[in-house]
Image 1 (tube, rainbow, N blue to C red):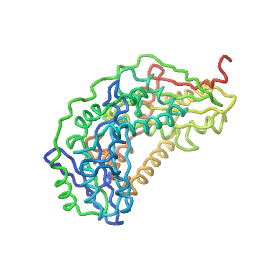
Image 2: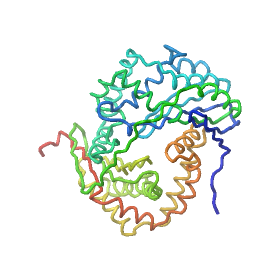
Image 3: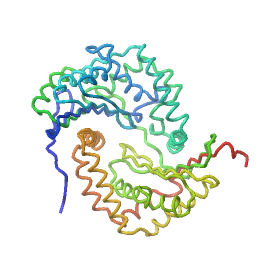
Image 4: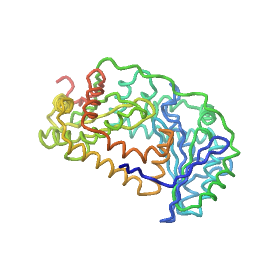
Length: 423
């Protein structure tokens, strides 16, 4: 018996290609308004890496109708707020506000989509903000730098190898013409999706949206990401040397894109390996053998083939080699069928629990709807996926571990503390 989650989501398509998804929810007087653009670092090329994230900043610096004033200064006095994020596949803007502010938010968002105020002075200011962000999150962060090194080593051709934050030299050289070209290429109705969740009337909201967005010119996206990553045919290793107290290592296995059903088994595997104190790797490395300080994993579903990442921070006096051996031993056990049905059920329950927690708010629900539409081309997918998880069995997990978790498909980055150099 299926248990598909159902919401009364309505989908509209404006003549200029803009998708609008609405979900009325009148329990609390709040509206969440998302704008998803199908553009991220995967769409960048050498010379302008980081422009997606830099552009995210520029979108808050005013537009033709609302010059010289930021979104926050407009929304905060009215009880609302705004924010945004950039990923490898998309750039997302969102606002949370009382219902009577909807008309103003639509005017703000539509004006910056169609008439963004791109000026060199603001660009120079924001590039310095982003460069400082890079210093903080990447150059002065051990995990951030290891993650950057991992993607650089694992990918030889695909733009996923570029850091989302961009290279410092590119951030310094991106100019206003680059920004205008980026705006015209990707920031248009046909490459975006609006999601509204909360206390509003759908017909009224749609009328306001049509009035403000229908006049925005459509520029068909001319540049698509077409570079295919070659199959990795041998293990890769990178040493990263930096002053540090302990060794750490990060392992990345090439994994499939969102159109491959293996992503479900891999997500269950990720949960079994690292999610919680009773997970296999946390239990083995942190509690049983007591050689690691922390263990985590990342498996982000993406438009193109991605990475399944495992990270371990060792305790003092223990090497990365010792941690790697235990990690690979656990993987080999699963390859040979050493996995309990109760652990699979527990992982599925955790995934379901996290999902329901993520959609408890209008913001969380809006994010799920929009990201599903952008990634899968179907906002309903994310609400059907729990039933798909239920179909995954032990043999599916054994299959994906043997298929993807092999040496030739593996890239390892090891942090070697500089204090130990030469030892």
